[in-house]
Amino acid sequence: MKNTVGVIAASALLATGVVGLQAPAQAAPYPDTVTTATSIKAPSTLKSRQTFVIGVYVKAGNASISKGTMRVRWNGKLYVGTVRKSVFRLTLRAPKVTKGTATRTLTAHYVGNKDSVFKDSVSRSVISIKKKTK
Image 1 (cartoon, rainbow, N blue to C red):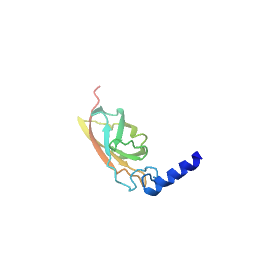
Image 2 (image 1 turned 30 degrees about the vertical axis):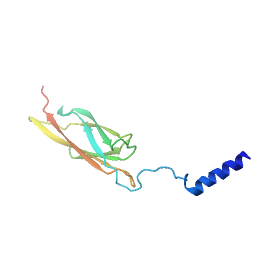
Image 3 (image 1 turned 135 degrees about the horizontal axis):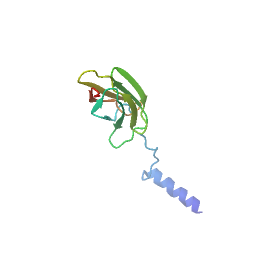
Image 4 (image 1 turned 180 degrees about the horizontal axis):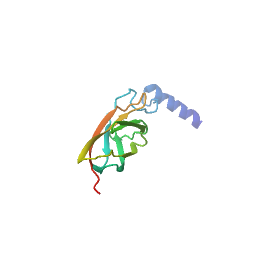
């Protein structure tokens, strides 16, 4: 008897439109709709031939970016890797400097996966490299 009353009440609510059936919520259905921002954490000055670690962070408002491709260009070379939990880490080496101080640009380019809702983003950082003193 209780089952029958529950079924009748549920069908009445559905028929009147008070209660509706909903599909589960999904992310934005259109690719490239969420803007991202890329930031680089790297030292501003280095010594010649010094190794250093960079961290490239990708943010999209309050959303966490779980996957994507990061392309880092340093000293004429391209390094490609995968973003995990909005972070990409890479160990690099400064070029040899023979006279005074040189500057190099570190460029990080985030590329979202195919059919991803996140847009691509680019960030640059200028690093000074000093000659080693003996």
